[in-house]
Image 1 (cartoon, one colour):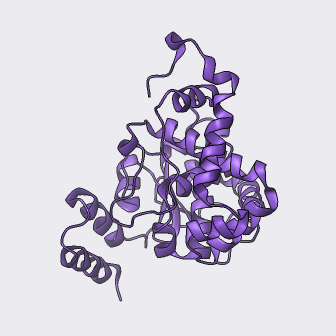
Image 2 (tube, rainbow, N blue to C red):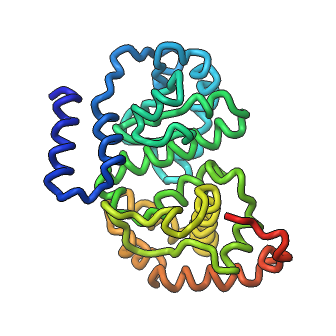
Length: 285
């Protein structure tokens, strides 16, 4: 079946479901499915990288970072990628947005079985390239392991917090840990819930947070879960990769519900030096 026919099928399903998704996002998803990559080439020595014509220089900037990023992600996820990895590099932000179904201001995205990288990443500092690449590869690893539907049912805070933690802050570069601590202690924070929503995920905007603040806060919770019990964290990640529901995976691994871990994390933050920042230094988002 061609991508174009698949795209029409996706559109039909969305319409039949009564318009649960916003029309704009639906259109972006359908458009992304319909995009052709037949002109893309393996323009570097790394066969995992596919270039849109005109993106060869950007792909060469990404290529030296791929092997190390794969190692980082596989260690953090406690297993190898079960399927081949495909990384698509785009010539323009607009083409990146069409293929990935996200805003052209984004650095990267993962979907349709591939990591999508904007020229914003390739032309940025090497540290940014590495962190965004690892962030997106973490998304891809989880999608390959658990499947897209299971991942879509994860709470969004964890779905974004894990890749941000794995990549050492990929996507959260503009917000320091102290800024995130201060915001959380003083009432501007996400909520760690057990359930996700396929149609109405609670993300940064729903908590009135900027994306960098959201990424930083959620990654701090993920880091806390790992630090308080490394063996439990590993079991949880493996259970989630096997398709187990998030809340059940947390309970089975830690022997207590997520709500207690969240309460302990919040209590620890209240004792953190960052919580006592003067208000004049507090971040705005």
